[in-house]
Image (tube, rainbow, N blue to C red; front, top):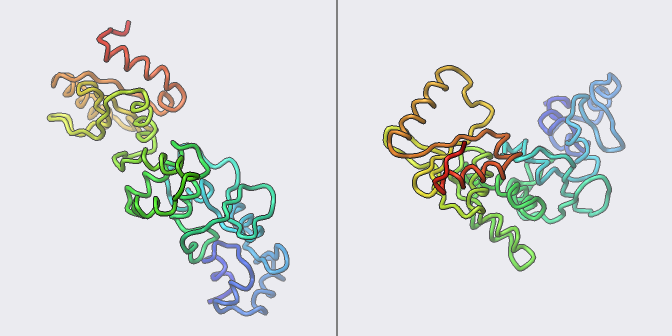
Amino acid sequence: MDAITTLRGLGSVARCCEVLKRGPTRRQIDRHVARGEILRLRTGVISLPDARPDYVAAVLNNGRLTCVSAAATYDLWTVTPANSLHLSCLHGHGAGYTNHRERTVPPHPRLPLVGLVDVLVHALRCLPPLEAAVMVECALRRGDTIRSFLLDRLPGERNAPARAAVGLVTCAAESPLEVVARVLFINAGFHVETQVPLAGVGRVDFLLEGFLVVEVDGAAFHSDRRALRRDLRRNNGAIVGGYLVLRYSYEDIMFHPEEVLREIRQVLSGRVIR
């Protein structure tokens, strides 16, 4: 395998020794460097010109991406994208990033990432509980790992907040927005059922106090006329069946949660919103 293909398989940036272990020779690498097809970032580190900046930062710091910085590569749900770099550097020194030194499982076999379980463990120790729970919910729902395997890596009193964040996970959500909404409703003291099948309606996102249907809609909501007609029929079917219905957007749940709770409380208390 040639040096460029090998380097591409390693995430387009790697220590030179990692490339050499896979077959290419140093002479081949030097030839690509002379042509500008491979960049020598510093002694012992090479990359392709289009390498991802976060991968480059990880390799230059002799580390691996983790926590929310690794979420997108592992296709994990997040509430907000990473706004700072999270690495796992075993040497424990460096600046410009949050370092998560401890690793409990083997790292990614090719890319500069820690293993997925360590991504979750680091997120649970680092992020706000809800943001970590969203990532864990995604992984557990997909079957990437199991709850007990995570909890075994979070022993002792210092990990009590992380274990509490795992307790927010039910694996019932179909989107990160549903996780946020569920926690919002539970924390408000409502009796919450999720993904409830209703006759003539289908599954609804939430059923509060046994009679109030709450649906939360992401960006794809009503993307076409067929989707609009479907949801109108669902709303009408729920009301005909004796339920009340409220619908909220991503912006409502994420940016105006108190207004959402105010409206829900008004409905549950029997007061009509004028």
